[in-house]
Image (cartoon, rainbow over all chains, first blue to last red; front, side):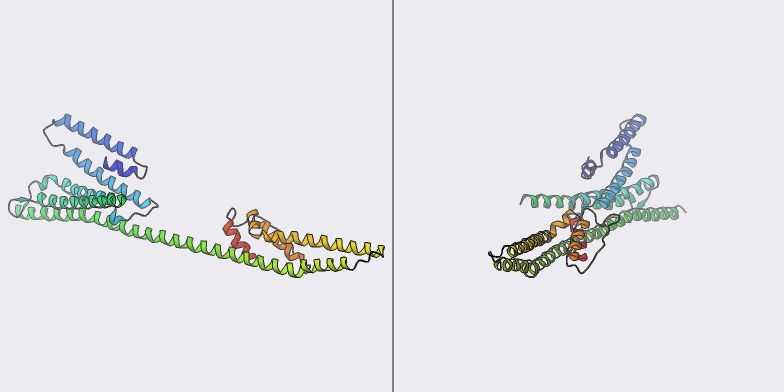
Length: 144
Length: 180
């Protein structure tokens, strides 16, 4: 939905968003039917991660092609997409080594994935928090 | 043996994660650099437009000034002289001598017609800026008529093909000014 809103600003969204949603729905239903409701849908999650990375790249492509200039430092949408890209791009690496990572531990009993997700989460929520701050500043500015 | 394999896997995972983490960082950096260039380009474009507009205004003022100078000189040197001569001719008419009076009246009429013709040409020059509106070729044609009027030069003007800046009055005006 968020990507749909972002792409709408460039008037080139419907087909890409609908295709992604259809793919997501197909995979979700397939996994649901194959192993039931109580098992995590890993395939859907992996594909969704890749899809978000592709969407993020597509946003950058649209941004580069756009004739207008945007002050990226204060562009809330840009920081939202950047956070998403960092998280899901790093996440893809974890997904690739899913089976091996489940056994790897560092610093005694802590799993390696725990630290990786910690870094990724900090990046994601850091970017998103800054994005919301930019949004708030923009709203305040337009009010005055 | 198992410990070595674990360390290798650990390192591999950490390096891969780092790569996957650094790669988007470079993308973001690239976007920032590109965006800065875009800003610079937009600013340069605006500056060029500003310079171009200033140049156009300057050219228009120069054209107007030159037109005024030509009009002033022509009124003083040419039409003024013709009208003075007409006045003298009319003043020198002797009503008793009808054939001679007829001759002088004819001369005065001729001088008046010439004055009117000169005034018309001057009127066309006064519309110098509007000449460009009619087209660059037309404006150049009028300018050549003005040169030929002196009687000292004979100009053959032919226009083959299209003008370089068709449908752009600003560019036409600059070319016209260069021609002048």
